[in-house]
Image 1 (cartoon, rainbow over the protein chains, first blue to last red):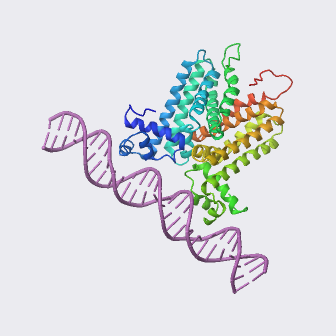
Image 2 (cartoon, rainbow over the protein chains, first blue to last red):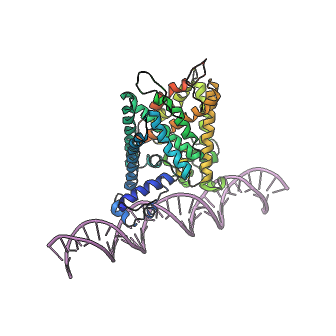
Image 3 (spheres, rainbow over the protein chains, first blue to last red):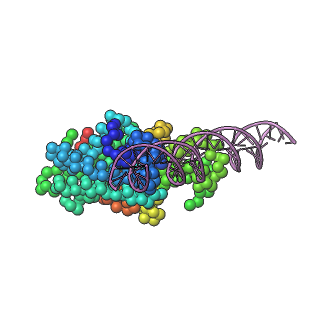
Length: 205
Length: 205
DNA sequence: CCCTGCCTATGACCGTCGTCATAGTAGCGG
DNA sequence: CCGCTACTATGACGACGGTCATAGGCAGGG
């Protein structure tokens, strides 16, 4: 995992996101972040004068941007874009990781929400913004596929909720079962929302 | 909130669950649990010689039992039980709490998973067991409503995943929107799974 | 009265954590 | 060489946190 390239500041934000998604916010130390980023400890107070809260907030923001941007890439990878296909790709990112690298990490935004929603208002807001960005990207993708405007955002919320929950179950059970289940169960529902006059089932195996 | 009645041991487990679901596992201290339970600090090492890990595991187990038992109560409250109706009730428990008491707490099992899945194997196992118990209760309820046996568990997993994810979104956004959305979007899909005479879209894996 | 369990009471230990204070280095325009 | 800015280096501080050690109360039975 080449942490090189890009400035130390960016590396620290990235490392923070990685550690948070693995251990949670509270269990992730500042010194640990610096070490993981191969950045000098002294740079912490220089780049993040707002302390841990600022670092966590930026990590959450980074994760939101990453998730949002990823949607466009999923779309580009699909030969024939359908809502169910997009969801399957989103889920597959996680099953792939879990099967190849183990169940070590979850979603950093979820971790920030669980650990800080009640104690750090700015972090809660950052998590909200991250989810919004992600939801917006998915909703826009759904619209582009022909999902009626008023159905796009609710379905995007459903997709992200199911995915987040399935990630939790998968980590707890050390089994991708929940992830594959939500993908399979939700696929037809999502595809049925495209407002073409006739067809319903474009799902893939 | 009468913490009295029941022994101090049980009170501490209950308090642990409450604090964990609010602040996360790492941010919840043992001394804090004892104080919240109005139990003597000295009792901690007496009742939980396994330390914090044991206490957390028991809190998670309690939450799993609570969630599972709750399903039966939801069923009893429904005049005409349907899968969508059950899900709506499960969701409503959370919207009610959030609207009346604020967005202070999430699911303790989710918190334990996020904070400990990678660091405490026994806690991860406890979370897995809690989710299994909950999923099992829901799946059984679905079966009783006429959902085909092979569809009951996948749908239960979908329900719980969506609910857990929506809880996360709701806490982050301080808005029950995600919860009401998943309830509304998933309701028809769930109701369609009851095996009345011959409906068509039963995709079996 | 004492012994024996259960339970409770505290103080101490040791580690970690976030943060701060202070000082150092590197590059650069002048 | 100077001064200035950007960045790094490190030790210390104060606050907890989990756990342990040790001792106190307090039934009930002998």
